[in-house]
Image 1 (spheres, one colour):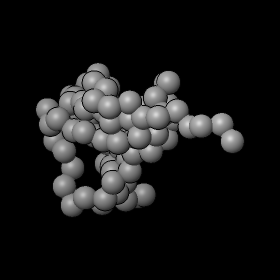
Image 2: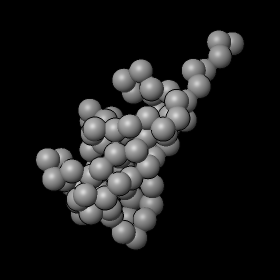
Image 3: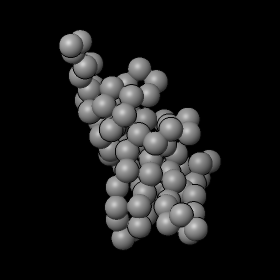
Image 4: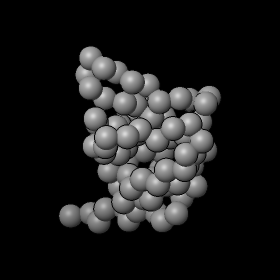
Length: 82
């Protein structure tokens, strides 16, 4: 199943997995897009919370997980101007 990790409604990382991290799990992702001053390549760690539990959309075949309360483990590089 596809899992989409979102910050403020924007998908910042997508993965395919046969399991969804349960509430309380620590998750580490590498951002694939820019959001809230964080560039692609930024590595975040966070806990899946019961305040924002995973949303299973069986119509689309996607699980959405809100990324909240993250810690930046590594900042992504700002793209160089051409």
